Image (spheres, rainbow, N blue to C red):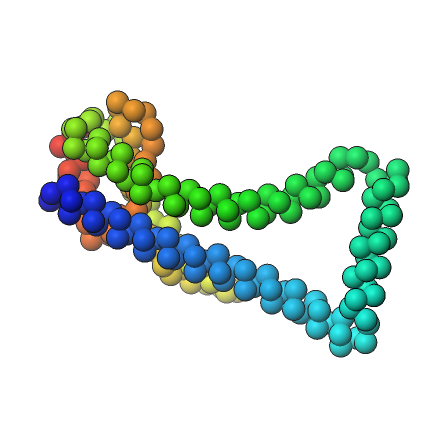
Length: 175
């Protein structure tokens, strides 16, 4: 297997993983919108004025937060918790968009014949459907976790399941 073939295989699997991750995050976003829609439906079906309820909650919250009744750290922790929930998804997307650079570094180590310290494979399921008795796992992505002795940097590279053994053989030649 040549370097270009290996690069094409790894980049193709990376694009597949990226697409599955976007689908996963979209499903989570749709579920969040459904929950918010259900809450709005309950407000409307009970005859409550949504605008008055929201403005009342916001005004009461602002008045109560500005009072000395709540400690200062609560004024910081609640927004940070909300931002960290969003930050998790943003971090995942940014990390995935940096992966082609990591694949290129990985291929340079393989090309140089750098010695591998650790080679482990794992399977991650991107789309999980939890049911009462059984969980349905779809969208599996097989990844290699490789550490080279020269850099001591861990590379998490998505690999097609059918090519896993061939790539492990290539890495075994370097160890």
